[in-house]
Amino acid sequence: MLLTKKADYGIRIVLELSKMPSGTLISTKELARRQGIPLPFLSKIVAELASAQILETKRGAKGGVKLSVSPEAISLLDIMEAVDGPVGLSYCAVEPGRCHREPHCSIRCCLMKVQETLRNELQNISIASLVQTESTLQS
Image (tube, one colour):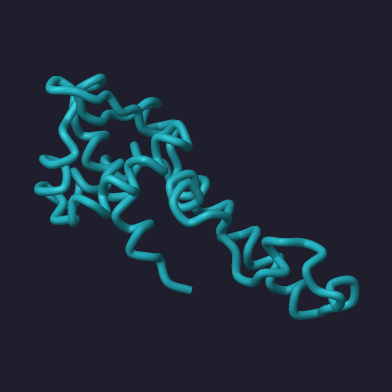
């Protein structure tokens, strides 16, 4: 399982915004430049993150984008699911009832355990903790 480019960009966008003073708006053009993300792709990701209430957008000359909640309240799982949908290892683990083998499938049983661990770990990693780790690595 690989992190999608969309999820990677989403995490980078939120991480960049979390380093700014609270409430500061930045244009999507500037955000795209800082992160090296194509503007049309960044705009789509920003819209999805705004729809998930992770970001807030404001149109106009003095508009831009900012976090809508504190970095402590945003997890990697929140961002990944906002842009890619449910995080899972198999369709049957994400969409119960999709497979007729589900009630007696040992593969699904094992994957569900791994998926639960993965989701819990991603939920426990906040953007605030990533900012702290990044500043430690740069010291």
